[in-house]
Image (cartoon, rainbow, N blue to C red):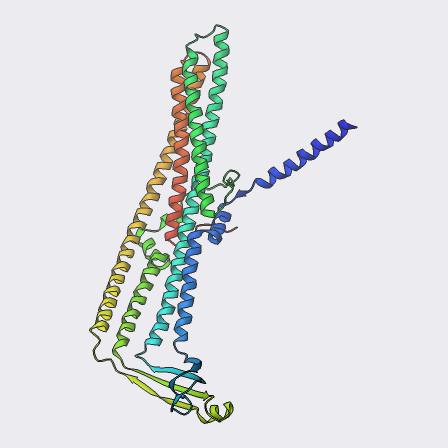
Length: 444
C-alpha cells in the first residue's frame, strides 16, 4: 500500500514539474520583444511623461483666455482706536467687524501674448510627439540588435559545442588506439589541449550569451534573466530591395520619415514662436475688471442684513498698461529668443548633415557586410572540405593530431565568423531599411 502511495506521489510530482518547466519555457519572438519594449521601456515612459507635460502646458495656455475670479473674507475683533468698516469712523472701543470681496478680471489685449502662447503649446506638443516616436524607433533598433545578437551567439555556441563533441569522439578513439598500442602516447596531448581550449571557448560563449540576454531583459524590464530565451526565428540574409535605390534617394526619403529631422524642424517652429512671444512685451496691455464688496460691524445699530445691503459697493473699469522703459529687459528677451531661433536652425541643418552621413554609411555598411558575409561563406565552405580531408587522413593514421587539431580549429573559426557576418549583415540591412521607411518588424 505504501509503495503504491509513493508511486502516485512521484507521478504527480513529475507531472507538476513538467507543467512548471513548460510554463517557464517562454520563447520571445522579435515582434513580441519590440511590442513589449514599447509598452514597458523606461526611456519610452519618460518620453510619455514629457508628452503629458505638453498637455498641461496647453491646458494652461487655454486658461490664459479665461477671466480670473477671486473672493476673500475677513472677520476681526478690533480694540482701541480703529476705523469702523461700516461707518468709516474712528471708534475707540472693542467691536467685531466683517468684510467680504469678490473680484474678476479679464485680459482684453496683451500684444497677442495669450494667442501666441497657445500656438506655442501646440507646436511643442507636436515636437514632443516626434521625440516620443524617435525614442520608440531607437528602442526598436536596440531591441532588434540585441535579439539578433542573441541568435548569433546561440548559433556560435552550437558550432563550438558540435566541434567539441567531435573532438571528444576523436579523443576517445585516439585513447583506445593508444591503449591498443596502435599509436604512441604523445598523440593524445594535442587533442587534450584542443578539447580544453574548446571547453574554455564554450564557457566564454555561454557567458556572452547570458550577458546579451540580461541586456535585452533590462530593456524589456524583465527580471527573470535565467529563464529568458528568444525564439529560434529564421532570418534570411537575402539581398534587400532597398539596395536597388541609390543613397541619395534613400536620404531624401529618410528626411521625410526619420523623426530626428522632424524633431529638429519642429524645434525651429517653436523657436520662431518664442520670438513672437517675447515681442509681445513691446505692446500695451488692456484689461477689464469688476469687483463687489460688503461689510458689517457690530458697533452699528443696523442688523447684519441691512448693513450688507447698505454698505456694499461695486467697481468696474478698464486698465491700460503701456510699457515705456524697463531696463532693456524686453529687448534682451527678444535678442535671446532670436539667438535661440538661429541656433535651432543650425541644429536642423546639422541633423540633416548627420542623417546624410548615416544613410551613406549605412548603405556602404550593407554593401560591405554583404561582401564579407559572402566571403565568410566561401571560407567556411573551403575550411569544411579541408577539415573533412584532414579528418580522413587522421582516421587512417596519415596525419598527426597537431595538424588535425589546427584544421579543426580553423574550420571552427570559419563557421563562427560566417555566423557573425550573417547577423551583422542582417542588422545593417535593417538599419538601411529603417532609413527608407520600411518597418523594423514585419507583423504576422
